[in-house]
Amino acid sequence: MTTSVPYSAYQATAAHPPAATVPAAARATELTKVYGQGETRVTALDSVTVEFGRGEFTAIMGPSGSGKSTLMHCMAGLDSISSGSVRIGDVELNGLKDKQLTQLRRDRLGFIFQAFNLLPTLTALENITLPMDIAGRKPDKAWLDQVISTVGLSGRLKHRPSQLSGGQQQRVACARALASRPDIVFGDEPTGNLDSRSGAEILGFLRRSVQELGQTIVMVTHDPVAAAYADRVVFLADGRIVDELRQPTADSVLERMKRFDARGRTS
Ligand SMILES: Nc1ncnc2c1ncn2[C@@H]1O[C@H](COP(=O)(O)OP(=O)(O)OP(=O)(O)O)[C@@H](O)[C@H]1O
Image (tube, rainbow, N blue to C red; front, side, top):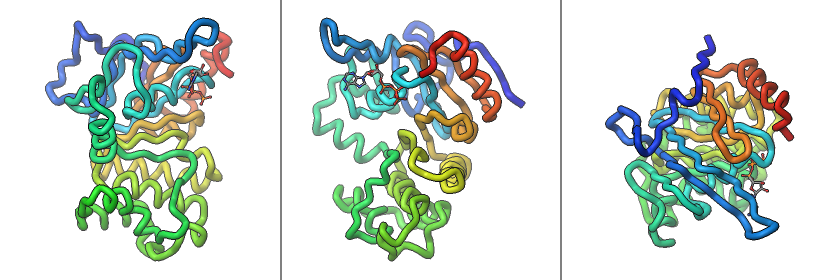
C-alpha cells in the first residue's frame, strides 16, 4: 500500500528537530547553494531541510535542473555550500578543512556513479579493495565476503573489468562503495548506463544491502522504477523539497511526477 503524507509532516526544522535521539545518517538544515554571480547567478538549492535515516534507502527525484545532484554533492562533501548546515551523523561539514573532508569521505562515505570508474588493469577484487588499500586500511574479511556474495560476484573476483558485462562492472563499483562499511552510500544515477535487466539487478542488490546489511543509501534517479526500490522518495523542484512518498511504487512515483508536469515543472 502506498502511504501519502504531506511533506510538512516529515520536515524537520532547526526549531523543531525530530524526536529521534539517534542522529540521522545525514541531515541538511536550511541548505542553500548558489552558483555564479550577477546575471549567471543560479540558486540550485533554496533553504533545503531534509534528513536521511539510518538503514534507509532514499531516492531523490525531480525534473532536470531541480537540484538533485547538487543536493547529493553538497551532502557528500563533494561541493561547498553557500549557507545552512550539512551533517554526516554528528559531524558538521561546514568548517572542516579539505584534508578532514577528504578523510571523512574516504572513511565514512561510499559513492556509486553512472560511470563505473573501475581501473582496467586491476581485477574485480583489487578494484573493490582499492580505496581501502590506498587508505592503508585492512578490509573486515567477514564483511567483505558478505558484500561480495550479496552482490553476486564470488565467481568473478579475478576477472578484469573488460571481461565483465556493464552490470557486473557496476556490481564491482557497488561492492567497492560498500567495502569499507560506510555510514552512507551516495548513488548518482547508478543504473543510468545499464539495460533494464542489469539495472534491476543492481537495484535489487542495493535494496538487499539495506535490508540484510543495514546499509544507508541515498540515490539520485530519474527513473520511477528505480525509485520504487527505495523506502522513501524525496521530490525536488526548483531547488526546494516539494513532496515525499514512503513505500513508493513505480505507479505512485509516476503519479507524483505527473502532478509536477501539470504545473509545468518537468524538463
Ligand atoms: N557548477 C555549476 N555551475 C553553475 N550552475 C550549476 C552548476 N552545477 C549545477 N548548476 C545549476 O544548478 C541547478 C541544479 O543543477 P543540478 O545538476 O543539481 O540539477 P539536477 O536535478 O541534478 O539535474 P539533472 O537531472 O539534469 O542532472 C541547474 O540550474 C544547473 O544549471
